Image 1 (cartoon, protein in one colour):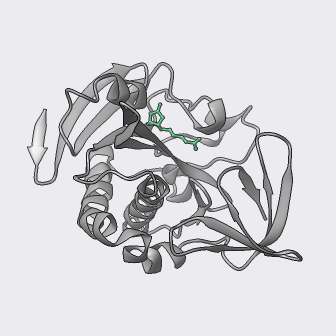
Image 2 (tube, rainbow, N blue to C red; image 1 turned 120 degrees about the vertical axis):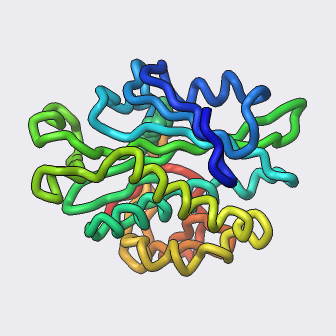
Length: 245
Ligand code: BTN
C-alpha cells in the first residue's frame, strides 16, 4: 500500500480482476483506493465481455466513496476517467478521442476501456468503483482474433509505450484534480474537457441496445452527462448500448 495525496495504491502482481477485488473489499478499502494488477485472470469488460489482461497493459480500479453518493454521478465517473486517460495519452504525444460510453480510441482502434459500477448498500447508493484497462505494450499480433480494431500505445509510438507507473500516476493526477468539482457541480464541471475529446458529438450515430433495438440520430451529451440523440421524433436520452458512427 502506498498513499499519495487523494489516492492510495494497492498494488498486486496478479488478481482475478481489479474490479472484482474492489467490489469484494469495498467495505474495507478507503475512499480513493486504487487497486492495480500486472495481470488479471478474469479481466471484465462491459456487457459481459472479457478484458484480455496478459501483462502488457495497465489495469486498475478506483474505489469512490463520496460524501453524498448519488446514482446520477455514475456515468460522470466514467466520463471523468475517460478524459483522464486521454489527458495522459496526450502527454505521451498521442491524439485520443472518447467514444461513448467508455471507449478511448486512438490511431484507428480502441486503446482503453472504462468500466464503472455503482455500489448499493441497504437499497441506497454507497459509492462506486471505476476502472480502466489501457493497452500499453502489445504488438499487432497480440490483438489477432479480436472482433474489433485495437491498438496499443507502443504500436502508435513506434515501439516503446509509456512507463506503466508514471502513466498511471498521470491518469490519477488528472482524475483526482477534477473529482471534487465533479462531485460538487456534476457533469458541468468537466463538460468542456470531455466535449473537446468526444469525437462522436455532432455526428450521425446509431446506438445498438443489448435487447437488439437500434436508435439513430445526431449525438450530443446533455447537462447530466447522458447521451442524447436528435432525430426525426425530437430529442431522446439514451442510457446504454453500443454506439457506432
Ligand atoms: C470495456 O471497454 O469493455 C471496459 C474494459 C475495462 C477493463 C478494466 S481492466 C481493470 C478493471 N478490472 C476489470 O476486470 N476490468 C476493468
